[in-house]
Amino acid sequence: MDAHRTDDRIVVVGAGLAGLFTALKLAPLPVTVISPAPFGEGASSLWAQAGIAAALAEGDTPEDHAADTVRAGAGIVDEAVALLMAREARQRIEDLLRYGVPFDKDLEGRLALGHEAAHRTSRILHVKGDTAGRAIMGAITEAARATPSISVLEGYTARDLIVRNGRVQGIALAPADRDPDKQGLLLPARAVVLATGGAGQIYAITTNPKEARGEGVAIAARAGAVIADAEFVQFHPTAIDIGRDPAPLATEALRGEGALLINSRGERFMRAVHEDAELGPRDVVARAVYREVMGGRGAFLDCRPLGPALIEEFPTVAATCLSAGIDPTREPIPVAPAAHYHMGGILTDAQGRSTVDGLWACGEVTSTGAHGANRLASNSLLEAVVFGARVAADIVAAIPPLPSRNFSAAATEDASVRHDAEAEQTLRRTMSAEVGVIRDAGSLSKALATIVTLERENDGDPQLANMLTTAKLVTAAALARKESRGAQFRSDYPASDEFQAKRSFLTLRKAEEIAREAAGVSSPPQLRVVSQG
Image (cartoon, rainbow, N blue to C red; front, top):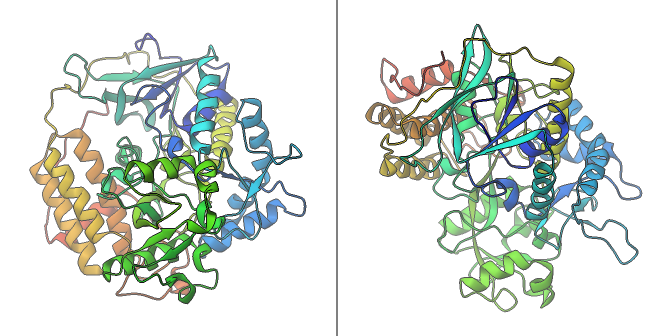
Protein backbone atom coordinates (compact mmCIF):
# COMPACT_ATOMS: atom_id res chain seq x y z
CA MET A 1 0.00 0.00 0.00
CA ASP A 2 0.98 3.66 -0.34
CA ALA A 3 1.49 4.52 3.33
CA HIS A 4 1.53 8.25 2.50
CA ARG A 5 -2.12 8.40 1.33
CA THR A 6 -3.95 7.86 4.60
CA ASP A 7 -5.24 11.30 5.54
CA ASP A 8 -8.82 10.31 4.68
CA ARG A 9 -8.55 6.91 6.29
CA ILE A 10 -9.34 5.26 9.58
CA VAL A 11 -6.25 3.59 11.01
CA VAL A 12 -6.74 0.32 12.87
CA VAL A 13 -3.65 -0.68 14.83
CA GLY A 14 -3.54 -4.44 15.17
CA ALA A 15 -4.38 -7.29 12.82
CA GLY A 16 -5.87 -9.75 15.27
CA LEU A 17 -9.53 -10.66 15.47
CA ALA A 18 -10.66 -7.36 17.02
CA GLY A 19 -8.79 -5.22 14.51
CA LEU A 20 -9.75 -7.16 11.39
CA PHE A 21 -13.39 -7.56 12.43
CA THR A 22 -13.56 -3.80 12.98
CA ALA A 23 -12.03 -3.16 9.56
CA LEU A 24 -14.50 -5.52 7.88
CA LYS A 25 -17.44 -3.86 9.60
CA LEU A 26 -16.15 -0.40 8.55
CA ALA A 27 -16.36 -1.31 4.86
CA PRO A 28 -16.73 0.49 2.51
CA LEU A 29 -14.97 3.28 4.45
CA PRO A 30 -11.23 3.23 3.66
CA VAL A 31 -9.22 1.59 6.44
CA THR A 32 -5.50 1.05 6.93
CA VAL A 33 -4.67 -1.89 9.22
CA ILE A 34 -1.25 -1.82 10.90
CA SER A 35 0.23 -5.29 11.36
CA PRO A 36 3.59 -5.74 13.13
CA ALA A 37 3.92 -9.29 11.84
CA PRO A 38 3.28 -10.58 8.32
CA PHE A 39 -0.44 -10.30 7.71
CA GLY A 40 -2.23 -13.26 9.28
CA GLU A 41 0.55 -13.96 11.80
CA GLY A 42 1.57 -12.76 15.25
CA ALA A 43 -1.86 -12.09 16.79
CA SER A 44 -2.87 -13.58 20.14
CA SER A 45 -6.18 -14.52 18.52
CA LEU A 46 -4.30 -17.13 16.50
CA TRP A 47 -3.25 -18.84 19.71
CA ALA A 48 -6.74 -19.13 21.18
CA GLN A 49 -7.40 -22.83 21.64
CA ALA A 50 -10.62 -23.03 23.58
CA GLY A 51 -13.22 -21.27 21.46
CA ILE A 52 -15.89 -18.59 21.60
CA ALA A 53 -18.79 -18.48 24.05
CA ALA A 54 -22.39 -17.92 22.98
CA ALA A 55 -25.77 -18.90 24.40
CA LEU A 56 -27.03 -20.94 21.46
CA ALA A 57 -28.19 -24.19 23.07
CA GLU A 58 -31.82 -24.94 23.74
CA GLY A 59 -32.61 -23.76 27.25
CA ASP A 60 -29.58 -21.46 27.45
CA THR A 61 -30.11 -17.69 27.36
CA PRO A 62 -27.98 -14.55 27.05
CA GLU A 63 -29.12 -13.68 30.55
CA ASP A 64 -27.65 -16.95 31.86
CA HIS A 65 -24.42 -16.32 29.96
CA ALA A 66 -24.22 -12.81 31.41
CA ALA A 67 -24.91 -14.16 34.90
CA ASP A 68 -21.99 -16.59 34.58
CA THR A 69 -19.80 -13.74 33.35
CA VAL A 70 -20.75 -11.62 36.35
CA ARG A 71 -20.19 -14.51 38.75
CA ALA A 72 -16.71 -15.19 37.37
CA GLY A 73 -15.80 -11.49 37.45
CA ALA A 74 -15.68 -11.37 41.26
CA GLY A 75 -18.02 -8.49 41.90
CA ILE A 76 -16.85 -5.77 39.52
CA VAL A 77 -18.28 -6.72 36.12
CA ASP A 78 -20.36 -4.02 34.48
CA GLU A 79 -23.58 -6.04 34.29
CA ALA A 80 -25.08 -3.97 31.48
CA VAL A 81 -21.98 -4.52 29.35
CA ALA A 82 -21.94 -8.26 30.08
CA LEU A 83 -25.58 -8.52 29.06
CA LEU A 84 -25.23 -6.61 25.80
CA MET A 85 -22.20 -8.76 24.92
CA ALA A 86 -24.13 -11.96 25.58
CA ARG A 87 -27.20 -10.72 23.68
CA GLU A 88 -25.16 -9.79 20.60
CA ALA A 89 -23.26 -13.09 20.57
CA ARG A 90 -25.65 -14.90 18.22
CA GLN A 91 -25.45 -12.17 15.57
CA ARG A 92 -21.64 -12.13 15.71
CA ILE A 93 -21.46 -15.93 15.44
CA GLU A 94 -23.65 -15.68 12.34
CA ASP A 95 -21.16 -13.15 10.95
CA LEU A 96 -18.28 -15.55 11.56
CA LEU A 97 -20.15 -18.36 9.86
CA ARG A 98 -20.72 -16.13 6.83
CA TYR A 99 -17.00 -15.38 6.77
CA GLY A 100 -16.40 -19.12 6.57
CA VAL A 101 -15.39 -20.14 10.09
CA PRO A 102 -15.79 -23.96 10.23
CA PHE A 103 -17.16 -24.39 13.75
CA ASP A 104 -17.50 -28.01 14.91
CA LYS A 105 -20.89 -29.61 14.35
CA ASP A 106 -22.58 -32.67 15.77
CA LEU A 107 -23.77 -35.68 13.78
CA GLU A 108 -27.03 -33.91 12.97
CA GLY A 109 -25.25 -30.88 11.53
CA ARG A 110 -25.94 -28.55 14.44
CA LEU A 111 -23.24 -26.42 16.03
CA ALA A 112 -21.49 -28.48 18.70
CA LEU A 113 -21.20 -26.75 22.07
CA GLY A 114 -18.54 -27.63 24.64
CA HIS A 115 -18.28 -26.99 28.38
CA GLU A 116 -15.58 -24.94 30.09
CA ALA A 117 -14.79 -23.73 33.58
CA ALA A 118 -17.30 -21.49 35.38
CA HIS A 119 -19.93 -21.85 32.63
CA ARG A 120 -22.98 -23.57 34.08
CA THR A 121 -23.87 -25.13 30.74
CA SER A 122 -22.29 -26.05 27.41
CA ARG A 123 -21.97 -22.93 25.24
CA ILE A 124 -18.45 -22.97 23.72
CA LEU A 125 -18.01 -23.24 19.96
CA HIS A 126 -14.79 -25.01 18.97
CA VAL A 127 -12.98 -25.83 15.75
CA LYS A 128 -11.36 -29.28 15.70
CA GLY A 129 -11.13 -29.25 19.47
CA ASP A 130 -8.34 -26.73 20.05
CA THR A 131 -7.82 -24.79 16.79
CA ALA A 132 -10.57 -22.17 17.06
CA GLY A 133 -8.28 -19.16 17.10
CA ARG A 134 -6.33 -20.22 14.02
CA ALA A 135 -9.48 -21.19 12.11
CA ILE A 136 -11.30 -17.96 12.94
CA MET A 137 -8.27 -15.85 12.04
CA GLY A 138 -7.79 -17.75 8.80
CA ALA A 139 -11.34 -17.00 7.70
CA ILE A 140 -11.25 -13.36 8.83
CA THR A 141 -7.86 -12.76 7.19
CA GLU A 142 -9.14 -14.09 3.87
CA ALA A 143 -12.25 -11.90 4.14
CA ALA A 144 -10.07 -8.84 4.81
CA ARG A 145 -7.83 -9.64 1.83
CA ALA A 146 -10.92 -9.77 -0.36
CA THR A 147 -12.25 -6.40 0.86
CA PRO A 148 -11.12 -3.51 -1.41
CA SER A 149 -11.55 -0.85 1.29
CA ILE A 150 -8.94 -2.50 3.56
CA SER A 151 -5.23 -1.83 3.07
CA VAL A 152 -2.58 -3.45 5.25
CA LEU A 153 0.73 -1.92 6.29
CA GLU A 154 2.93 -4.80 7.46
CA GLY A 155 6.03 -4.71 9.61
CA TYR A 156 5.22 -1.64 11.71
CA THR A 157 4.35 -1.27 15.38
CA ALA A 158 2.76 1.57 17.35
CA ARG A 159 5.06 3.97 19.18
CA ASP A 160 2.87 6.94 20.09
CA LEU A 161 -0.38 8.70 19.30
CA ILE A 162 -0.38 12.08 17.61
CA VAL A 163 -2.59 14.46 19.59
CA ARG A 164 -3.47 17.94 18.39
CA ASN A 165 -5.97 20.29 20.01
CA GLY A 166 -7.06 17.53 22.39
CA ARG A 167 -7.88 15.08 19.61
CA VAL A 168 -6.03 12.05 18.29
CA GLN A 169 -5.21 12.84 14.65
CA GLY A 170 -2.74 10.12 13.80
CA ILE A 171 -0.18 7.65 15.00
CA ALA A 172 3.60 7.28 15.06
CA LEU A 173 4.89 3.93 13.83
CA ALA A 174 8.26 2.22 13.99
CA PRO A 175 9.61 -0.79 12.10
CA ALA A 176 8.61 -3.87 14.06
CA ASP A 177 11.68 -5.85 13.05
CA ARG A 178 14.16 -2.99 13.57
CA ASP A 179 15.09 -3.18 9.91
CA PRO A 180 17.80 -0.53 9.35
CA ASP A 181 16.47 0.05 5.82
CA LYS A 182 13.10 1.18 7.21
CA GLN A 183 12.25 4.44 8.88
CA GLY A 184 9.36 5.20 11.16
CA LEU A 185 6.21 6.90 9.93
CA LEU A 186 3.75 9.49 11.17
CA LEU A 187 0.33 8.55 9.78
CA PRO A 188 -2.54 11.04 9.87
CA ALA A 189 -6.01 9.57 10.33
CA ARG A 190 -9.67 10.52 10.67
CA ALA A 191 -9.86 8.12 13.61
CA VAL A 192 -7.50 5.68 15.29
CA VAL A 193 -8.70 2.32 16.58
CA LEU A 194 -6.30 0.53 18.91
CA ALA A 195 -6.66 -3.25 18.71
CA THR A 196 -3.11 -4.07 19.74
CA GLY A 197 -3.92 -7.05 21.96
CA GLY A 198 -2.51 -7.91 25.34
CA ALA A 199 0.55 -7.30 27.47
CA GLY A 200 1.74 -10.79 28.36
CA GLN A 201 5.27 -10.12 27.12
CA ILE A 202 5.95 -7.80 30.05
CA TYR A 203 6.11 -11.11 31.99
CA ALA A 204 8.88 -13.70 31.68
CA ILE A 205 6.39 -16.59 31.55
CA THR A 206 3.48 -15.96 29.20
CA THR A 207 1.33 -17.66 26.59
CA ASN A 208 1.26 -14.46 24.50
CA PRO A 209 3.25 -13.98 21.27
CA LYS A 210 6.19 -11.57 21.18
CA GLU A 211 4.02 -8.82 19.69
CA ALA A 212 1.88 -8.62 22.88
CA ARG A 213 4.00 -6.02 24.68
CA GLY A 214 1.24 -3.76 25.99
CA GLU A 215 2.09 -0.91 23.63
CA GLY A 216 -1.53 0.07 23.06
CA VAL A 217 -2.14 0.69 26.76
CA ALA A 218 1.08 2.70 27.03
CA ILE A 219 0.50 5.02 24.10
CA ALA A 220 -3.13 5.61 25.07
CA ALA A 221 -2.15 6.43 28.65
CA ARG A 222 0.55 8.81 27.44
CA ALA A 223 -2.08 10.58 25.31
CA GLY A 224 -4.19 11.08 28.45
CA ALA A 225 -6.56 8.09 28.27
CA VAL A 226 -7.89 6.62 31.49
CA ILE A 227 -6.76 3.03 32.13
CA ALA A 228 -9.18 0.78 34.02
CA ASP A 229 -8.69 -2.40 36.07
CA ALA A 230 -4.98 -2.58 35.17
CA GLU A 231 -4.15 -4.77 38.17
CA PHE A 232 -6.16 -7.71 36.88
CA VAL A 233 -3.85 -9.96 34.88
CA GLN A 234 -5.18 -13.44 34.29
CA PHE A 235 -2.69 -16.26 34.65
CA HIS A 236 -3.67 -19.36 32.72
CA PRO A 237 -3.23 -22.28 35.12
CA THR A 238 -2.11 -24.84 32.55
CA ALA A 239 0.67 -23.49 30.38
CA ILE A 240 2.78 -26.45 29.28
CA ASP A 241 5.98 -26.22 31.30
CA ILE A 242 8.66 -27.20 28.78
CA GLY A 243 10.85 -24.09 28.85
CA ARG A 244 9.54 -22.38 25.72
CA ASP A 245 8.86 -18.66 25.26
CA PRO A 246 5.98 -18.12 24.72
CA ALA A 247 4.76 -21.03 26.80
CA PRO A 248 2.44 -23.37 24.86
CA LEU A 249 -1.07 -23.63 26.22
CA ALA A 250 -2.99 -26.67 27.36
CA THR A 251 -6.53 -25.48 26.70
CA GLU A 252 -9.11 -25.38 29.44
CA ALA A 253 -11.34 -27.48 27.21
CA LEU A 254 -9.19 -30.48 28.18
CA ARG A 255 -10.43 -30.16 31.75
CA GLY A 256 -13.94 -29.68 30.40
CA GLU A 257 -13.57 -33.09 28.72
CA GLY A 258 -12.28 -34.82 31.87
CA ALA A 259 -8.55 -34.11 32.22
CA LEU A 260 -7.42 -33.90 35.87
CA LEU A 261 -4.89 -31.80 37.75
CA ILE A 262 -2.49 -33.83 39.89
CA ASN A 263 0.83 -33.30 41.63
CA SER A 264 3.92 -35.49 41.52
CA ARG A 265 2.34 -37.74 44.17
CA GLY A 266 -0.64 -38.36 41.91
CA GLU A 267 -2.97 -36.37 44.21
CA ARG A 268 -5.92 -34.43 42.74
CA PHE A 269 -5.26 -31.21 44.68
CA MET A 270 -8.17 -29.17 43.23
CA ARG A 271 -10.85 -31.17 45.06
CA ALA A 272 -9.71 -29.65 48.34
CA VAL A 273 -9.57 -26.13 46.89
CA HIS A 274 -12.89 -25.54 45.09
CA GLU A 275 -16.25 -27.25 44.83
CA ASP A 276 -15.91 -27.36 41.03
CA ALA A 277 -12.43 -28.91 41.32
CA GLU A 278 -10.64 -28.68 37.94
CA LEU A 279 -13.46 -26.53 36.54
CA GLY A 280 -13.15 -23.83 39.18
CA PRO A 281 -12.50 -20.18 38.20
CA ARG A 282 -9.17 -19.60 36.51
CA ASP A 283 -7.75 -17.46 39.31
CA VAL A 284 -8.48 -20.14 41.89
CA VAL A 285 -6.99 -22.90 39.74
CA ALA A 286 -3.93 -20.79 38.87
CA ARG A 287 -3.13 -20.12 42.53
CA ALA A 288 -3.56 -23.79 43.40
CA VAL A 289 -1.21 -24.83 40.58
CA TYR A 290 1.25 -22.12 41.64
CA ARG A 291 1.28 -23.40 45.23
CA GLU A 292 1.96 -26.96 44.09
CA VAL A 293 4.83 -25.81 41.89
CA MET A 294 6.33 -23.54 44.55
CA GLY A 295 5.86 -26.26 47.17
CA GLY A 296 8.09 -28.57 45.15
CA ARG A 297 5.30 -31.04 44.41
CA GLY A 298 4.90 -29.99 40.80
CA ALA A 299 1.66 -29.72 38.86
CA PHE A 300 0.55 -31.92 35.98
CA LEU A 301 -2.44 -32.13 33.68
CA ASP A 302 -3.44 -35.77 33.46
CA CYS A 303 -5.09 -36.30 30.08
CA ARG A 304 -4.98 -40.08 30.23
CA PRO A 305 -8.73 -40.25 31.02
CA LEU A 306 -9.35 -38.89 27.50
CA GLY A 307 -7.55 -41.88 25.95
CA PRO A 308 -6.28 -41.99 22.35
CA ALA A 309 -9.07 -39.61 21.25
CA LEU A 310 -6.92 -36.79 22.66
CA ILE A 311 -4.67 -36.86 19.59
CA GLU A 312 -7.54 -36.24 17.18
CA GLU A 313 -9.68 -33.97 19.34
CA PHE A 314 -6.84 -31.71 20.59
CA PRO A 315 -4.21 -31.82 17.86
CA THR A 316 -2.38 -28.64 18.90
CA VAL A 317 -1.78 -29.80 22.46
CA ALA A 318 -0.89 -33.30 21.32
CA ALA A 319 1.64 -32.06 18.77
CA THR A 320 3.26 -29.70 21.28
CA CYS A 321 3.65 -32.45 23.87
CA LEU A 322 5.00 -34.98 21.37
CA SER A 323 7.54 -32.44 20.12
CA ALA A 324 8.83 -32.16 23.69
CA GLY A 325 9.02 -35.93 24.14
CA ILE A 326 5.80 -36.20 26.16
CA ASP A 327 3.08 -38.68 25.17
CA PRO A 328 -0.05 -37.11 26.71
CA THR A 329 -2.02 -40.34 26.27
CA ARG A 330 0.43 -42.18 28.52
CA GLU A 331 1.91 -39.60 30.93
CA PRO A 332 0.78 -36.39 32.64
CA ILE A 333 1.76 -33.03 31.15
CA PRO A 334 3.85 -30.68 33.35
CA VAL A 335 2.06 -27.34 33.73
CA ALA A 336 2.58 -23.96 35.40
CA PRO A 337 0.67 -20.65 35.50
CA ALA A 338 1.58 -18.10 32.82
CA ALA A 339 0.45 -14.54 32.09
CA HIS A 340 -2.36 -15.07 29.63
CA TYR A 341 -4.92 -12.27 29.43
CA HIS A 342 -5.14 -8.68 30.67
CA MET A 343 -8.62 -7.84 31.93
CA GLY A 344 -7.49 -4.23 32.36
CA GLY A 345 -6.71 -1.73 29.64
CA ILE A 346 -7.97 1.40 27.95
CA LEU A 347 -11.28 2.45 29.48
CA THR A 348 -13.97 2.47 26.80
CA ASP A 349 -17.69 2.93 26.73
CA ALA A 350 -20.13 0.52 25.10
CA GLN A 351 -19.26 1.97 21.66
CA GLY A 352 -15.54 1.49 22.16
CA ARG A 353 -14.77 5.17 22.68
CA SER A 354 -11.83 5.98 24.95
CA THR A 355 -11.67 9.08 27.12
CA VAL A 356 -9.58 10.84 24.42
CA ASP A 357 -11.41 12.34 21.45
CA GLY A 358 -10.66 10.55 18.19
CA LEU A 359 -9.45 7.33 19.84
CA TRP A 360 -11.44 4.09 19.85
CA ALA A 361 -10.26 0.70 21.06
CA CYS A 362 -11.46 -2.89 21.11
CA GLY A 363 -10.27 -6.34 22.11
CA GLU A 364 -7.82 -7.20 24.85
CA VAL A 365 -6.22 -3.75 24.89
CA THR A 366 -9.44 -2.39 26.41
CA SER A 367 -11.31 -2.57 29.66
CA THR A 368 -14.98 -2.54 28.74
CA GLY A 369 -16.12 -3.81 32.12
CA ALA A 370 -17.18 -7.16 30.63
CA HIS A 371 -14.54 -9.23 32.41
CA GLY A 372 -14.26 -7.67 35.85
CA ALA A 373 -11.53 -9.18 37.99
CA ASN A 374 -11.45 -12.55 36.27
CA ARG A 375 -12.40 -13.26 32.64
CA LEU A 376 -14.85 -16.08 32.02
CA ALA A 377 -13.41 -18.73 29.71
CA SER A 378 -13.91 -18.11 25.97
CA ASN A 379 -15.38 -14.64 26.43
CA SER A 380 -12.31 -12.94 24.94
CA LEU A 381 -12.97 -13.79 21.29
CA LEU A 382 -16.61 -12.89 21.82
CA GLU A 383 -15.69 -9.49 23.25
CA ALA A 384 -13.39 -8.86 20.28
CA VAL A 385 -16.13 -9.33 17.67
CA VAL A 386 -18.96 -7.71 19.65
CA PHE A 387 -17.02 -4.53 20.37
CA GLY A 388 -15.25 -4.52 17.03
CA ALA A 389 -18.69 -4.30 15.42
CA ARG A 390 -19.74 -1.61 17.89
CA VAL A 391 -16.62 0.50 17.25
CA ALA A 392 -17.24 0.32 13.51
CA ALA A 393 -20.89 1.30 13.87
CA ASP A 394 -19.96 4.27 16.06
CA ILE A 395 -17.30 5.54 13.66
CA VAL A 396 -19.64 5.15 10.67
CA ALA A 397 -22.27 7.17 12.53
CA ALA A 398 -19.78 9.82 13.66
CA ILE A 399 -17.72 10.21 10.43
CA PRO A 400 -14.79 11.89 12.25
CA PRO A 401 -13.28 15.02 10.63
CA LEU A 402 -10.12 14.95 8.53
CA PRO A 403 -6.87 15.57 10.41
CA SER A 404 -5.14 18.95 10.18
CA ARG A 405 -4.36 19.85 6.58
CA ASN A 406 -0.73 20.64 7.43
CA PHE A 407 -0.29 17.15 8.87
CA SER A 408 1.62 14.98 6.41
CA ALA A 409 3.15 11.54 6.86
CA ALA A 410 6.81 11.86 7.77
CA ALA A 411 9.78 9.84 8.93
CA THR A 412 10.17 9.59 12.68
CA GLU A 413 12.02 7.07 14.83
CA ASP A 414 15.33 5.80 13.48
CA ALA A 415 15.19 2.02 13.18
CA SER A 416 18.78 1.83 14.38
CA VAL A 417 17.84 3.08 17.89
CA ARG A 418 19.41 0.60 20.29
CA HIS A 419 17.08 -1.68 22.18
CA ASP A 420 18.40 -2.99 25.48
CA ALA A 421 17.37 -6.64 25.41
CA GLU A 422 18.86 -7.33 28.83
CA ALA A 423 16.85 -4.49 30.39
CA GLU A 424 13.72 -5.97 28.80
CA GLN A 425 14.51 -9.36 30.34
CA THR A 426 15.08 -7.68 33.70
CA LEU A 427 11.61 -6.15 33.46
CA ARG A 428 10.01 -9.46 32.46
CA ARG A 429 11.70 -11.39 35.26
CA THR A 430 10.72 -8.71 37.77
CA MET A 431 7.07 -8.76 36.73
CA SER A 432 6.85 -12.56 36.97
CA ALA A 433 8.58 -12.66 40.35
CA GLU A 434 6.98 -9.63 42.01
CA VAL A 435 3.68 -8.91 40.22
CA GLY A 436 2.61 -12.47 39.48
CA VAL A 437 0.02 -14.90 40.74
CA ILE A 438 0.56 -13.88 44.39
CA ARG A 439 1.64 -10.33 45.35
CA ASP A 440 2.16 -8.15 48.41
CA ALA A 441 3.13 -4.57 49.16
CA GLY A 442 6.80 -5.44 49.41
CA SER A 443 6.97 -7.24 46.08
CA LEU A 444 4.95 -4.55 44.30
CA SER A 445 7.10 -1.73 45.73
CA LYS A 446 10.22 -3.62 44.70
CA ALA A 447 8.86 -3.98 41.17
CA LEU A 448 8.04 -0.27 40.93
CA ALA A 449 11.54 0.63 42.12
CA THR A 450 13.01 -1.57 39.39
CA ILE A 451 10.70 -0.04 36.76
CA VAL A 452 11.70 3.51 37.76
CA THR A 453 15.39 2.56 37.65
CA LEU A 454 15.04 0.98 34.22
CA GLU A 455 13.28 4.10 32.96
CA ARG A 456 16.13 6.28 34.14
CA GLU A 457 18.79 4.01 32.68
CA ASN A 458 17.14 3.43 29.31
CA ASP A 459 15.94 6.83 28.19
CA GLY A 460 15.53 6.85 24.42
CA ASP A 461 14.52 3.19 23.95
CA PRO A 462 10.92 3.57 22.71
CA GLN A 463 9.98 -0.12 22.73
CA LEU A 464 11.19 -0.58 26.28
CA ALA A 465 9.60 2.73 27.32
CA ASN A 466 6.16 1.45 26.30
CA MET A 467 6.68 -1.88 28.06
CA LEU A 468 7.79 -0.06 31.22
CA THR A 469 4.80 2.28 31.07
CA THR A 470 2.32 -0.60 30.90
CA ALA A 471 4.17 -2.50 33.63
CA LYS A 472 4.04 0.61 35.81
CA LEU A 473 0.28 0.95 35.32
CA VAL A 474 -0.32 -2.73 36.19
CA THR A 475 1.91 -2.62 39.27
CA ALA A 476 0.70 0.73 40.58
CA ALA A 477 -2.92 -0.39 40.30
CA ALA A 478 -2.09 -3.64 42.10
CA LEU A 479 -0.43 -1.71 44.93
CA ALA A 480 -3.38 0.68 45.21
CA ARG A 481 -5.94 -2.14 45.53
CA LYS A 482 -5.42 -3.33 49.09
CA GLU A 483 -7.50 -6.48 48.87
CA SER A 484 -7.68 -9.77 47.00
CA ARG A 485 -10.26 -10.07 44.25
CA GLY A 486 -10.31 -12.33 41.22
CA ALA A 487 -6.92 -12.41 39.50
CA GLN A 488 -5.48 -9.93 42.01
CA PHE A 489 -4.28 -11.88 45.06
CA ARG A 490 -2.50 -9.92 47.80
CA SER A 491 -1.00 -12.21 50.44
CA ASP A 492 -0.92 -9.22 52.82
CA TYR A 493 -4.63 -8.56 52.14
CA PRO A 494 -5.93 -12.09 51.44
CA ALA A 495 -9.63 -11.26 51.87
CA SER A 496 -11.95 -9.30 49.62
CA ASP A 497 -13.24 -5.98 50.94
CA GLU A 498 -16.83 -5.12 50.03
CA PHE A 499 -15.95 -1.41 50.05
CA GLN A 500 -13.43 -2.04 47.26
CA ALA A 501 -15.87 -4.00 45.10
CA LYS A 502 -15.61 -1.50 42.28
CA ARG A 503 -13.53 -0.96 39.18
CA SER A 504 -10.26 0.95 39.35
CA PHE A 505 -9.41 3.93 37.15
CA LEU A 506 -5.89 5.24 36.72
CA THR A 507 -4.11 7.89 34.70
CA LEU A 508 -0.43 7.71 33.85
CA ARG A 509 0.22 10.75 36.01
CA LYS A 510 -1.32 9.02 39.03
CA ALA A 511 0.60 5.81 38.32
CA GLU A 512 3.84 7.80 38.22
CA GLU A 513 3.01 9.34 41.61
CA ILE A 514 2.42 5.89 43.09
CA ALA A 515 5.63 4.58 41.53
CA ARG A 516 7.77 7.47 42.77
CA GLU A 517 6.42 7.12 46.29
CA ALA A 518 6.98 3.34 46.32
CA ALA A 519 10.48 3.73 44.85
CA GLY A 520 11.39 6.59 47.18
CA VAL A 521 12.27 9.09 44.44
CA SER A 522 11.18 12.70 44.16
CA SER A 523 11.10 13.34 40.41
CA PRO A 524 9.78 11.35 37.46
CA PRO A 525 12.06 9.97 34.76
CA GLN A 526 11.93 11.90 31.51
CA LEU A 527 11.33 9.32 28.82
CA ARG A 528 11.49 10.42 25.20
CA VAL A 529 9.37 8.46 22.76
CA VAL A 530 8.22 10.67 19.87
CA SER A 531 6.65 14.07 19.65
CA GLN A 532 2.89 14.27 19.74
CA GLY A 533 2.97 17.29 17.47
